[in-house]
Length: 229
Image 1 (cartoon, rainbow, N blue to C red):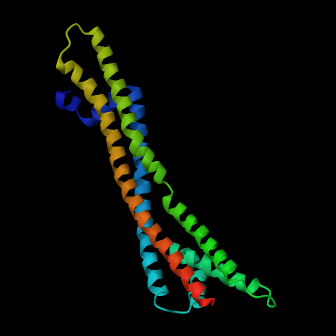
Image 2: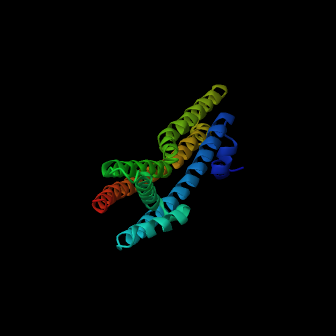
Image 3: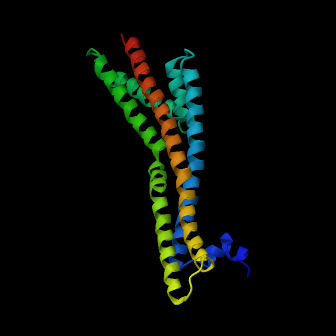
């Protein structure tokens, strides 16, 4: 086998120490899982943004709130996060008005507070759903380089231990072992860099959606207050 074949990536991985191979396999598995979450989260955030824009157009078109509430309730799973927040607030507003005694004056402030609390609870549920798996990406981005570095250190230690039985150490004798060890660091960076970039991007997109949700909660609360006068 020639030098080029000995220093190919496949040959270096197959000839690496078993501990280094286990670390490489761990990093490759973590990278595969993180890429799965990256693709799933990308599609989820795009769908949430598209559904939010669609509902905002329907809401601000000036239609009947009860009709919009019925439409959001019937298609709750497909209507999007903002529609579910609206459905929670409007549903609580309707139930509070219907459950109040007819002989007693309606406490508008209590009804509005109940609707606002329902929307806040729905807002937190939707935000938790959007934030799912982001901690995993953050952990991969911060820990993977150190795990790869552990494999590199172990591989270099093993390479220098092998030189103890060699009378004359040359670069040709050291290079394969060091190259095997450095692949672990490369795989660690391969797992970490996309995870960090995706985490920062997703956090930014989710923060923008959260601002839109919070603005809608306040604006819809004001609309309910005006209609209750």
